[in-house]
Each structure stands twice: as C-alpha cells, then as structure tokens.
Image 1 (cartoon, each protein chain N blue to C red):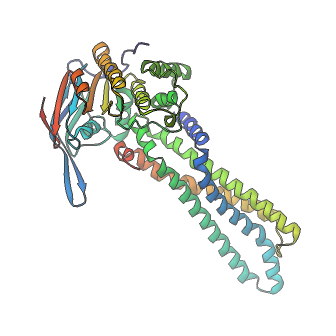
Image 2 (cartoon, rainbow over the protein chains, first blue to last red; image 1 turned 120 degrees about the vertical axis):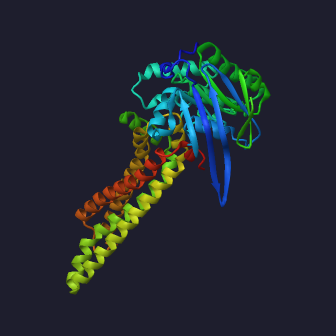
Image 3 (cartoon, rainbow over the protein chains, first blue to last red; image 1 turned 180 degrees about the horizontal axis):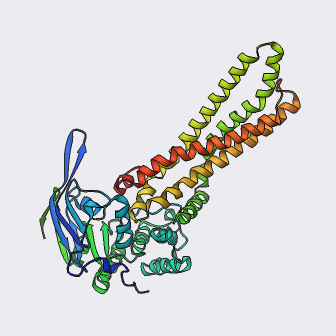
Length: 239
Length: 187
C-alpha cells in the first residue's frame, strides 16, 4: 500500500515552520516543590524534517512533545503549529487541530482495550461522517503497511507490545497528518520491528513531506533523523 | 456527529458488558427496594387506618420511600461515577487523537444510561416477582398491590436513569475539556 498525501497540507503556509516553540516553560507543582520540566525552550521544525529529541529520562522530551501536540499547555511561552499560535485556542479548537494535522504515537500505545486493531486504527475518524467502507479499507491498508494485515480483528490484549505499537502507528496515520509526534516509538519493540517503524517514519518524511518529531533513547532512531536535539534538565543542550 | 458518538457508546456497552455487571447489580438493588416499598405501601396504609394511626404511619411510609429513593440515587451515582473514572484514560486517548468533545460526551453517557436502564429494570422485575410470590403466599401481611408495584417500577427506572446521567455529565464534560495529558496520566 502507499501512504496518501497529507490531507491538511494546506494549513501550513509555505516557508513557515510546522512547529515553532518560543521561550516555553513548563512548571509542575510537586508538593511544596516547583519542578521545572521545561526551561525556556525554543525550537523550530520545518516541513519534512525528522527531528529526534534525545536525552535522559526526566529531561523534558515527553513534556515538550505533549506541549507541541496540545496534550498539555505551557506555563509560559508560545507554541505555533503550521503558523497558528496555539496559546490562544481552546481545548476544543486544539482537538480540531490535532484531528486535522497531528498524529500522536505514545510510548505506552494507548489503544482502546475493547476495540479490535482495525477499529483502533479507525478511532480518530470513527466520530466523523466518513464513508464507513472507505474508512475500514484505509485502516486495513495502514495495518498492512505496518505488517499487521493478519491481526485486524485482534484486541490489544491478544497482541504483543510490538504489534500494539504498530497498531498505534497505523492509527496516527489514519487522518493523513502533516505532523507526527512520537514518544519513544521503538522503546518496546525488538530491533527488527523498531527498524521497520523508523523506516516507515523516515519514508513519511522523505516521500510525503510529513514532519516527524520523536523522542528516543535509541541511537539507531537518532541515526535516521535529519536533526537530533539533545535535552537535559528541561533545556535544549545542543543540536 | 452525535450519532457516531452514540454508535461508539453502544459498541463499547456491548463489548464492556462484563464491566457493567457490578454497577448494574448495585443499581438493581436500589430499584428493588424502591419497588418493594411502593408495592407494600398501600396495604400498610390500609392496615394503619384500621389501627387509627393513618397519619403517623403514612408519614413513616413517605419517609421510608424517600430514604430508599435516595439510597437508589446514591447507588446509581456511585456506580456510574466509578464507570466514568475507570474510562478516564480512554477519554484522554480520544482527546489526544482529536475527537471532538460533544460526540465523546454522548459516547461516554451511553454506558451509564444502559447500565442504569438494565439495572433498574432488572431490580424492578425481580421485586415484582418477589412481591407477587410474597402476596400469593401470604408472607407479606400487608399485601402487595399491582398499582404500587408499577408506580415503584416507573419511579425506580426514572430516578436511576436521571441519577446515572446527571452524575456522569459533569465528570465527562470536565474530562473532555481539560488537556488530555491529565486524563492519560490517570490510573
């Protein structure tokens, strides 16, 4: 199967960065202590880039991804997605932006346990007036793409970690996003499956101009990236 | 889009039937008590009239009925709230994948509604059967009235449905309108 062109490509004005994080801070209150999860982070990611965020646990990689994707809000600073300042939009508007432009891959898969693999892939579009047969076919195509054509009707509990992650990757692609955010996408995969996943992400960037921002500990993933951003203690150390 | 939320809710209710069993039993217990109180209240009032304490016993019956109804409401609320809390992570996933809040609200309200309906109807039917047996065997000295049973069943079902939906709306609405990371990080 071939991955189709991102549907929402037009939302990114040409030349504008797909992601623009400016002077962003994220502070958490932990008891009486203030934890600085992100400290004055600025980052630009352009169309078609495959950017890897590397750093030890607690360095702020996942927090940065969550803030870019609007799963969490910054304490201070601005985040622009495809030229749109997201600091002024509501949760509902951000949900619409995620729906149209962003695919999210979680480290812990976050599949819905009572849905089959193919239904999990359909999930982001399940609440929309799409032709059901076309949607099912697209979900099947995506599962074939990640090598799970034989697991369509399996529920997550009956799949291995690698299979669940590949299902989550297929789900992130269902709405042809322009931006994919991947939090440790290969963390729970064997080496070979991890390579397939990284190659899939790489192909999305190089062939379709999809932008990928991934956090990882895996040097093999970083080797495939067009840019590596190193983080420590909530700050960007070097690129 | 709301009809797709409804479709998802019905699908999840079918697939999660096992998880819905305990909340349904809890609600059925409350409904059972409500129906039994209403079914026997007419007979008790009649007996009270014969003893000359109509008002006092009438008030006591009303008090018991209200108490049992409140127990039913609380049981329905606890059961449905537990269900919603258990699905918080799912709410986070739906939000993270960009699903809009209104269809999610509808989807997540289907299960409490179905649970309350099944539980209340089940409790009412069991109460009606038990009441009929008690009335037929003379075990209930006050007798069991068919009218009271029907009234009790209607009240039990209505109260359970309203309690389940009302107590579910607020937590679901709050969950779908906050950053998804908070729901995703919940256990």
